[in-house]
Image (cartoon, rainbow, N blue to C red; front, side, top):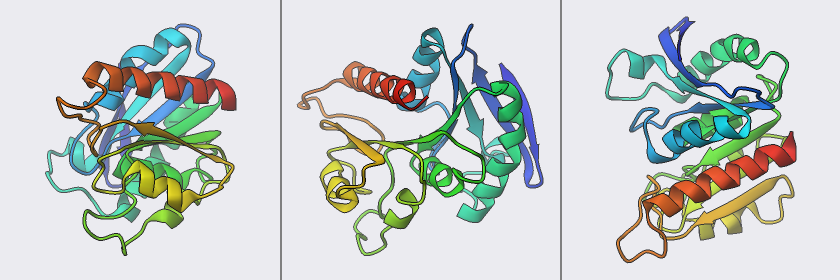
Length: 215
């Protein structure tokens, strides 16, 4: 189901895959280099509704307008926060877990408190620009006070799972799941221990277990 999401920055769009008897809503944003059709976002939208979780994928106004370059981070936050009342209406009082991939994960972390999120799901959190570890975005990942799940690839050039694990240290509210052999787009090599189907299953099962734990 497509739902128009008007914002002060132009129209956004929600694609809602509704559970028949939902226990929670998972609200997801996309990255700066792609839309809501990535392997991980698509897998969650396809699988979680059958498990009682409604999935709402938000397409930012810049993407709806057909632009190729993402808007500034603060602009992404504005559109996201202005869409929160629509998500609250869809949730009808159920817990709302926010999240997204890459830039969408950053938005979810920065705004978790303002939208009243019960938890945060980060898919391929961009810890730093490729080759620029000194430009760390760790502070954003540490912003939420609620539980945070991070699924990170071993080969992610924006920050490997190993690097991210060392950075978050003993933070008790952050759960890290390593995606073996995966890059930033959750893609794996032919020689990797997992194939694309395995990755999708790992993502969906990890997120579902997390949502059940926190809600």
